[in-house]
Length: 461
Image 1 (spheres, helix red, strand yellow):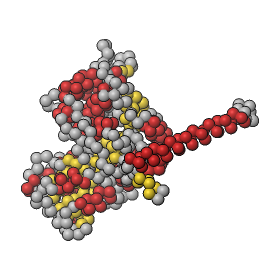
Image 2: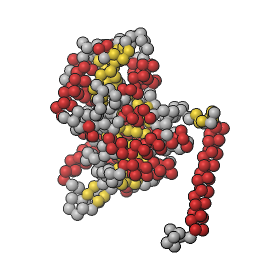
Image 3: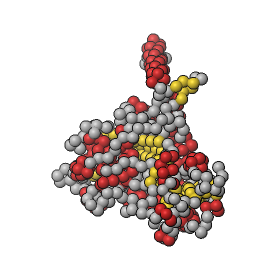
Image 4: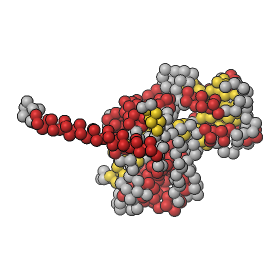
């Protein structure tokens, strides 16, 4: 640039010095913050390294009143006079209009919109980006509506009458590393904002691995930098093949340490609603990874009533309702979508001795809530971790040692799932269905003791 006359050497040196001065100032600022944290007891320096704050996060209220939710719901369904909603969406949006009534039916995307809308009216800015986030990869979200006759677009959530903060919404290209890198930087610079990035399929997060490994996961340990950045990664074995099955739960759990992130795999829209609001409101900022569903987006059993949003909170662990606790001898622990495969299996009704528990928050490990669930069943003999992912994938490697650490000695512990595989999914629908059915039948069959698939037999550690 000096050679062609665009800049002079003096200008080059001036810019170089300005950049150096800024980096120096940022470094000094970080050091002063660490010293202040040391003085307050949040961070202590030991032999040149930093001991991170791993204390539990104080809980925050996340419920929103029924009246407020009903008002927000009406506003989210309001379109300009003369606007022609696409015929294929009319029934879907009308279901949302009555879903807050006595019969319920609040689905995943509906709960998500209500969470966002409630935060906006409380003054929390929101930024949501990713591939096809306006509509939703599975045609479930529809934050932006298109007039079927004129092509005019409208986004009701961006014009809520009571909003105190803006919502940014951007479809992004298939350049995951660039998009997530930008969102990480945005979340660090705007800590008051709930910044979310959604992969079209959770598998696509592998294209962002440098940003995840070098910044999101380790930024707190390396630089004392964290954020509320939230990753939405569709995950679930539906027989669609290896590249549309696994968001690689195991990778994120392998990276989870020292309280650096939060990792969740949820089973109900209400849980999603409360966790999103918790992530936006909680004092202790940490990145959040949510493994979001595909088939559950429209599963009738995976819906909620308005009181689940208005009178409840997020639960790290969920038990199975309406189970005769005195008869239970086997507790099946799982996470995510396979819960519904288990409870809806034809063999479920014939096995009153089995209870199914859901680990909704995988990290930080909810030890107290897990023990509380185990202690619910006075005649329990065995606990088994069940997953649809292969043995070397999914949450097994993370959950097994933690469960072994807390289980009472008299309980056996085993694993049921796919064997070790190099590929996440079978790739053939018939093979997928056969293997899935084997897992479900085995988990529910008390005639096959968990000692057939042991991790620990009674009395062992």
